[in-house]
Image 1 (cartoon, one colour):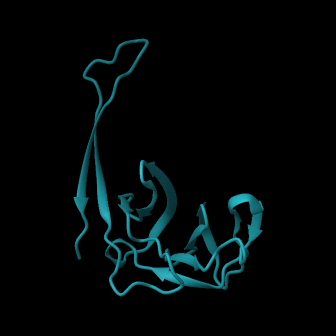
Image 2: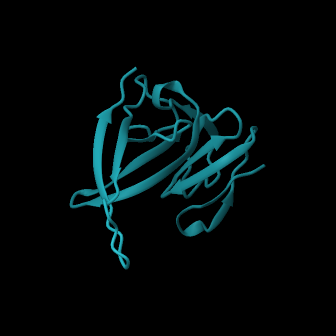
Length: 146
């Protein structure tokens, strides 16, 4: 199976993979893939205007080295430019994010990425009104450590 991604102005690009794919996320010139069954996270290296399918796959360290169900890449624009945030959902349905999991070159960095776990606490109202239901959400962020 070849993952399909929308990359820049090139439109849809087919990228070869040697493993079954469960999910694909594309953002800018970055492509993440979650492998089916094993739940490993992969990034396509050297993707760009001159090489839209990239050159090879790099395995990205997941939170705690555990298999994941899904992953996503998002871009956040700031006054000085932008940064990319990687998101991973593990098999316990815990959501994690990382600012440094995205590889910018064709080689893996020496240090594993830092993953932060997002903990949600949902508090439903005691007596919901008939027309509207308000839910309070508290967001807690924890640094993931091995």
